[in-house]
Amino acid sequence: MATPMLKKENIILNQPTAEREEVIRRCGRMLADSGYVNEHYIEGMIKRDNSFTTGIGNFIAIPHGEEAYKKDIITTGIVVLTYPEGIDWHGNPVYLVIGIAAKGDEHLDIMGNIVDNLETGDDVIKLIKNAGVDEVYQMLSGEPA
Image 1 (cartoon, rainbow, N blue to C red):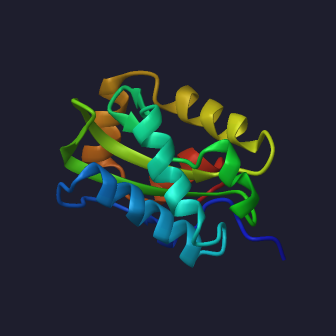
Image 2 (spheres, one colour; image 1 turned 45 degrees about the vertical axis):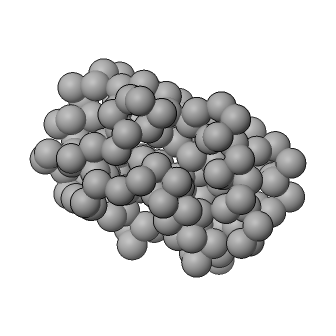
Image 3 (cartoon, rainbow, N blue to C red; image 1 turned 90 degrees about the horizontal axis):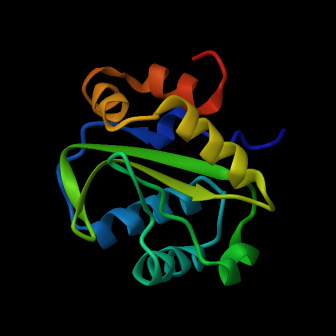
């Protein structure tokens, strides 16, 4: 059976604030522990964010690896962490972090889903304050919880 793109155990809510690089490493570790990537991908995630921020606005960051690290992706997967107190992401506040490892162009579907569901910063704040794991899972996977 194929590994699902998002597993409920990879949605971790209400985390205490942390340093940006520590959060990226945690996302990478979760992706690796879930069998989506091999260990080497984590370094690609750090390099990508250091060369071009993975903060996309609306209080969201989507850490992912540089192109050269695509070979380290085993299968497409995402992990989700929320930080109600926020993280300083290159000078901008981030409350929702979605770590991504995507084969081919599969990240475009993931990004489209994020944009469709979280159009504004207010949408993100509501999600962080009110949604449980099931709601986040349903929103990002498109599947019933």
